[in-house]
Length: 360
Image (cartoon, rainbow, N blue to C red):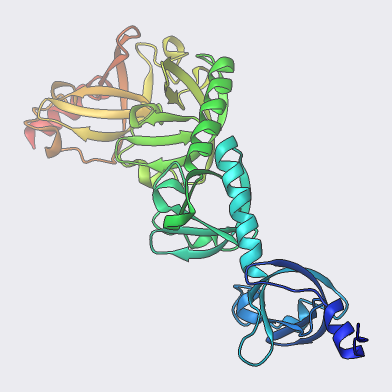
């Protein structure tokens, strides 16, 4: 048996590799767009930038150092120039898909950064494996602009896993729905009619405002915004504003709120404040053909009948009064039960003033 040459022994000592094989190597050189590894083969292995990362504009010299150990996958044993082409990214993606498959089967909650905002949703990456989250599954409410999620770490579950068809779908919405349901359950267990709670204005409409009480929305109807009249809620409240509100009613999952706190009820001391015979000042709030309504305090309107405006004949209230005008009148009737007050300016006139008015 003939002796083997040094070159033959060296070559025999080097391992044989095949396309698709996973091998370990040591970094022996790094360039901005290329990594060279010693993989124990007769030729060194090459990892191009595109086979290392999806990050555009990446400089590999800032990501890998000489001497680093790496586990990679063989793409091509001979690229035509005697070099071995390797991939790091695809191996991670394969392992990532295994991770996603496991998470899908176990209904596990994953957390990963959003790497791209797409026209129809978000793209997140788990160990180099991409997951698509459709816009309809990003939130439990409609969101037109998804740009705020760029770079943000979000939690989701895998709702569909079919890597062969390149369909790995994530769902964040069901987590938010479940979280909201849990908050609702907890809040309703501790919420009672008559409670005063703090909330944040979530939305304002022509008929009222929706207040977020911490996972549950309550309606503050326009009629409950003040003891007085509110013409336009949008001029009174701003989205994001914090409010202390009174729980007026709870029906199933619907909560009615109010800002009419009992201690601020302007009718609380009506018998004293609006006693019959008392002289009082107010502002004309609105008028009809039969009289004028005078605001004595926010939430307290009194009727000044046309026949009580003056001893002289008045055809219509608008002939002698105007909205916003301040008048002084005498309280001639009080009905606390029905919250009705009647006024008279005529009762404060002296007879001679009326005679002069009639002669004029």
